[in-house]
Amino acid sequence: MAARRSLLGLLAFCAACAARASGPAVSIPEAQPGRVRATAVAVASTGSVQPIAVAVTNGEAELLHLDARQVYGHTDGEGRTAPLPPAEAAGLAAGHRAPAAVRGGVVGAATGGLLGAVGGAIAGAIQGGIGLAVAAGSAVGAFFGAVTGALGAGTTPDVAGFENRALHDTGLAPGFSATGYVYYPRGVYRSLEILLTNDPGEVQRVEIPIEPAP
Image (cartoon, rainbow, N blue to C red; front, side, top):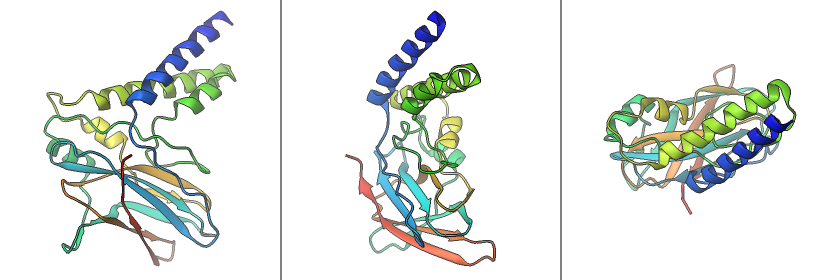
């Protein structure tokens, strides 16, 4: 019991620190029947890279496939820009660390790159047993991820950080959400165009404005 209290104290400390060092708050849309909803928030550029935090929720009655390569950025009058692979973005970041962890809640199950859910990890830790170990790892990992993301320039490309925090390819079941960063060459992007497909291969297009980070 004493060990559990000590660990929970450590997690609470990590949560407080991570909250100060964490990245943008991204509102994960609630599922709305018959619609795919998404939000996007731009953060400060990192070297020559513009990270944009994205959250997507599937309100359709069928599984939809999200391909992170099919999330295009739109600038004023210059067409659409394909995203950079995370490893390439890490190289273009000129030694800067990956952007700080995204803050947000989970709707259904987030099968993308949702990070920084320290509060949920602490709640899970109260259960004890294997839940305690898993929650502890999640909380401490989110904490150190947030801190390293806020430290600025490093000496080598932060490939692992850019990969871990990226929006990943996934299948979105009805009511499920995914979130993470999409990376573009540095610039001013006004909107995102997201292309999703169902099992027959039909394409659903969603275009959303990009909000500036508060």
